[in-house]
Length: 220
Image 1 (cartoon, rainbow, N blue to C red):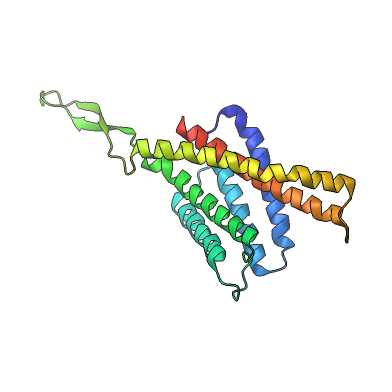
Image 2: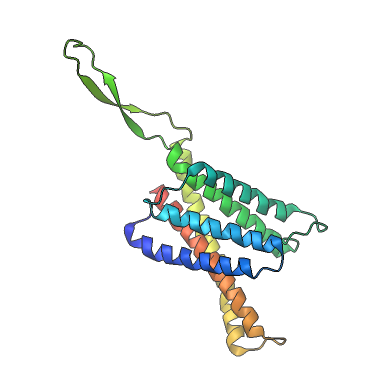
């Protein structure tokens, strides 16, 4: 899917994201937080499998997993305050909606190679000339399940949207880095808090960059 020279740098981003999400899952203060980071870990591993085409992961379990995970994040975004979920503040709800959209995009990306209308080579009896007993190999176009023109436009739009998400995650980090260096924020260990926020945003930006590159490669 990606250009060969991008495989290693993108893989490094995904491996770092996997390690970060696993660490956050083990240190989570609630089962919801731990589950959310486990789902992020599985998403990073799923993208890693798409980067390296030799890794043949079953398609249907991935579709079910990421589709269910997308619904789970959407459910958190629209849940009421009395439910013990993590997306109750406005930024939290926006974050959960974003993650629901990202996981839904994973489902779409996984389905793309299996819905494109590729020409298939099939073997048919040769006509006329039955006395030779040979077979004729012809190209029979398969009927696409999804319009290639529609999917091409969708992948381009998603590539642009995720590229914008990279900037949205990275730009606020400039202010956080400035605060961390100046140590202006009062309270208990503000530098550590800013460092955690920077790591979180770096992970989100790396995941968005990977999605953008994959959709851009698919649209070419």
